[in-house]
Structure formats: C-alpha cells, structure tokens
Amino acid sequence: MVFLWLVPTILAILFLSGFILWLATNGGLGFPWVAFYVKGKEVRFKLSEIHILRKAAVGAKMPNPVSIFSSVKTLDSTVRTLITDFRARQKMDDPATNVFLTELFEFRKKVGFNPTHFTKGIKTSRELMGGQRIRMTLTRDASFQSTVVETQRKYIAVAYPLGKELPPGFSWKNQKVKVYLWREEDAGYYFESKVLEDFQDLEIPALHLAHSDNLVRSQKRTSIRLDCDLPCSIYNLATIDLATEALETSSGYRGRLVNLSEDGCSLLVGGKAKVGLAMKVQAELSGHLVTMSGIIKGITYNKKKNRSVLHLQASPLSDRMRNDILTYVYDIFEERSDKPPKKYSSLES
Image 1 (tube, rainbow, N blue to C red):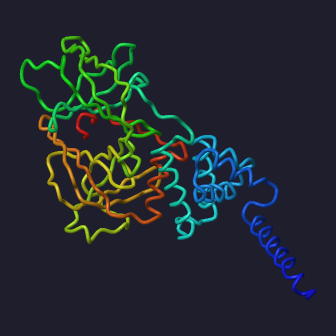
Image 2 (cartoon, rainbow, N blue to C red):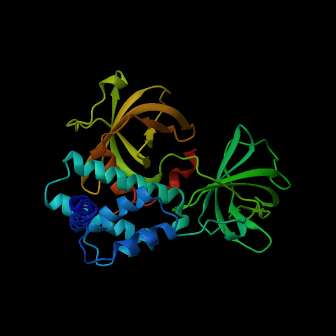
Image 3 (cartoon, one colour):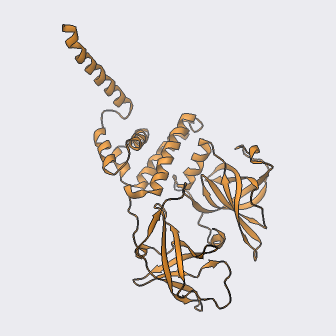
C-alpha cells in the first residue's frame, strides 16, 4: 500500500528531472522560456514555429531570445550567426545542419509573404512609395511595366508604361487599368484604377492614375524573388534528366542573371531561344558558386535589341544548394553589391 502512494511521487520526480534535463540541453535554465513561448503566441506564431525559433535562438546564443520576435532584421541576424558558426565548424555539408536551415528559411519565407508579425500591409494606394515597380494591364494580352514616381493626394504619378506597341495616336487618358505590384517584405497587391492624365509630350512622359482604397492583398508566389544583375554561365542540356548540381569547369554561354529565387530564375541572353529547352545555370553569389537546372517556361523577346529574357523553372534543389541561394536572396550577410537591373525592367514579365 505504501508503494502505491510512492508511485505518483516517483513519476513526478522522473518527469521533473526529464524536463529539467531537456530544458538544460535546449537553452539552459538561465532564461525564462515560458515568457519566450508566451511572446511568440502573442504575435501569432504557431507552436511549431516557436520551436524552430527557440532552437535558432539557442544555437545563436542570443542574450535575449525574445528579441527574435521584434523584427525581420533580428531574425536574419540570428540566421547569420548560425551559418557563421556552421561554417567555422565545417558543418555546412552536414545533412542535419541543412535540414535545420531549410526549416528556418521556410519560416523566413513565410514571414516574407505575411509579415504581419513585424509589419503592417497597406490598404490604400495612397501608401505607395516612389520607386515601387508596378505592372498595368489594359486587356488580357496587353501588359505594361512602370514605376511609381510619387504619390499625391489626388493621384499617383507613374513613369510612362513600357510594353506592347500601341496604335498611333493612342492615349492612356480615361483608360481603365488593372494594377499589380509586389512590395518587398510584404506581399502582392492588386487594384483597379483609371488614368486621369496622359503626359506623353512632357520631357519625362508620365501618367496620373486615380487612387484606390480597395487594394486586394495576394500571396500567390511560392518563393521570394530577387531582382539582380549578375554574370552567369548557361549550359544546354539534352534532357532535364541529365541535370546535376556538380560545378561546371567549362565557360558555357555567357548571360546575365536578372531575377533569382529558390524556384527558378530569369536570364538575359542575346538572340532568341525556345520554350521547353532544358538548361543549367551557374553563377557566383557572394563568393559561392551555385548551380540551378530547369526548363524554360517563358521568353520575353526584345526585337529591337535582339535579346531575350528566359524564365527558367528550376528542378528541385538539394537542401544545401537551396540554402546557399536563399542566404543570398535574403542578403543574410548584408554583402550584396548588385542593384536591380533597371535597363532590363521593360523585358521582364
């Protein structure tokens, strides 16, 4: 009978000892981790996400782990510390290391698409900032690229659209347009507008668009895209089944990498190409060579300059290669020197 009374006590001691051991090996007893989880729930993180962030905070030896919930910059700084440590200990090729970094980058991507934990989205076009790139459509087949110049109380001033050649005498004034845009560290947006004025004859042509308070927030992208301007080597593949991530030693065809994500890239090349071609791309990102293979799914051809932008859909990447690419895309080490390719913007879809 006495033994039966001892069973709950023994079990409680064993459970408490196990919990203390787990806590000690997952961040120690010196930080109030309950407060860490409470804060994570307050800012709408899932429990599984808080586990990942806790592991990252412990690995990065953060003095105040709760600060990881305060900003994207703090999160990136944590990832930077972890990668630096993994590199120093020559762990970057370790499968467990790359699985963990993949989980962390997947979370980082989610924050990029839905940053409401750290920032607020926009609800009106009056919040658009100068320099914001936009895409406007007149019809299903008429798409144009432009950039917000400035936002005034009564209108949005945008650079004169580039795209499909329009009939002689065409005026944008009073045309109804659909506007699409992607805000960095936020999401995609769509709204409908009307062109108030067409200043085609000015020294710097521009349009004035009517404001909209009915912005639709969209998160259709599956990956964060980076505009860039980097030299790359391109290799034709007889079939995508021959693709590998092995680094190439030959020079290949020369091109420019003008857009990059974990799911694909856009390449500027001379002349024309065909949709459906299998290709391998190799480029240097902050001193690290990366490769990506895939199929050309679309082409934007500039007849006047006889050059094309090839839109490549990548085959699945290894964890290590994806992590190397995302380290560059998110600029984890704040060392990117490239700038968005403005001279190519009219070619991109």
